[in-house]
Amino acid sequence: MTERSGQAGDATGGPAPTTPVCYRHPDRETYVRCTRCDRPICPECMRDASVGHQCPECVSEGRRSVRPARTAFGGGAAGRQGYVTKTLIALNVLVMVLSIASARSGSAVAGGGLGGLMGNSTPLIEWGATLALWPPPLPTEGVATGEWYRLVTAMFLHYGVVHLLLNMWALWVLGRTLEAVLGPLRFLALYLIAGLGGNVAVYLFSSPYSASVGASTAIFGLFAAIFVIMRRLGRDTSAIVPILVINLIFTFTVPGISVAGHLGGLVVGALMALVLAYAPRMRRTAFQAAGGAILLVALLGLVLVRTAALTG
Image (cartoon, rainbow, N blue to C red; front, side, top):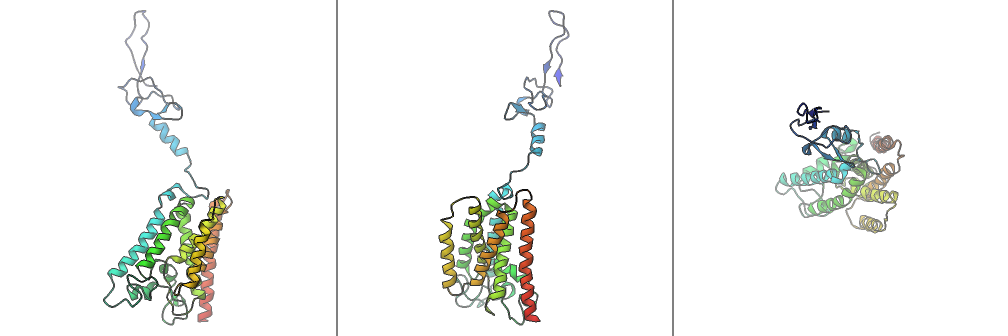
């Protein structure tokens, strides 16, 4: 205890009582003590506690001993800020801006370019030729010739501004909700694996020589995931089903839409969501990581089988 000594002796001849002083500020008298360590603290050092006040050191020690808050599926509270959703939107917009900025005169064809919804090319044909997903057989380029990166880069290309805006609006609405529930890392894994699943389906089932681009493979995975997650939480899903049905109708009726990509993303997104939502609590993170890894290996295995059949 830190105390200031009083005058030696008093009217009765005994020692004068001492006045407590703040342990961090010895020049300040105080009669308030920390409820944890019982040291005297001045008003500047007081930190409100559930009962009484605590000193700064006890508050810091208490924070270190408290486990960070987790969502029902093991995600961190940082997901409420939507950082991953915003970053994914920014990446998609950046790719569109770069392709527009680097487009040469006459590079866009009719139906594509800035205003195309489902046109024949991106604003720069070379971007699509380099990064888009081309189903086999394509003699000179594509996943079959070792360009596996196309299974990912195709998720960030779009056929025009309208195509981009529609997908980014859906990502903004669905992504923030799912990221808040799952946490940033689990949401990112869901998005990428669902998008990869859709692109693998394109590689397996789409007609040759038709380039496939867009974030909609991942978006359809998010549609399936939000249905699974809401069901797991016991919430009403009646508003989700009509939206999903409408999107499926558009998938099958509007020319130029990749049916394989949308359905592949939907199925793989649902599977990944089941892994995240129904993982046992005791070993939740390990189970979720293992489930995601199994899905990833299975998708890459399908690509290998397909490629071997084409080149064998």
